[in-house]
Image (tube, rainbow over all chains, first blue to last red; front, side):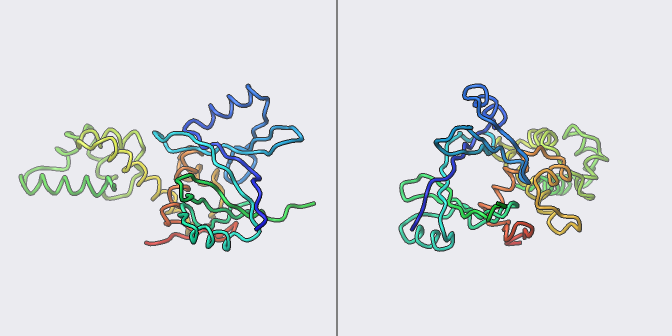
Length: 121
Length: 131
């Protein structure tokens, strides 16, 4: 399976404060011009990958989650479950057309898997 | 936890113990106005997090129970909009319609998705599950 980490996500109980911190620390750009108001983070460099910031429920600790782009999301979920993972969030099609799911791997680490909708050229 | 159900059950319990116990007395005990309580119980008035905390504390609920009651209200508010004729799969629209902050809407969506109570089938089609 061709699977590549294409995105990271910071789950923060204080997403606005986190966005401000990273903007000031690294000069990253944070925008929310999408249907979910998701804070998309661009580092502006030519190396590395971009990410995003999502709110965590109050009282829950923050953490970083990786997103792996896969060619077939359903097949990936089937394989992951067969290998001992749990599906925390089932296949979900986001308003921009990307599909994603959240897994908990057999060692207790959560990660996202996704397929991206075609982007206009 | 459904705070409205809890309030109704508590009122019923008190009225069973004392048939003359009134809604006004219950409201007074909860530190709220009886018309506010009436609207909450019978007319589905929105329960704000602040109101839920205040009433929850008066009922002797734990912090976890109060947090659960706030989540229950937010879940219900978002789910109630799915059949809305002008529904938009857009967190800002949901925030505007529910009065919740944008981040609270997204936390609610995440909770509903992981609880299998909401499915986002396509970019535009969301359905309520399991109810």
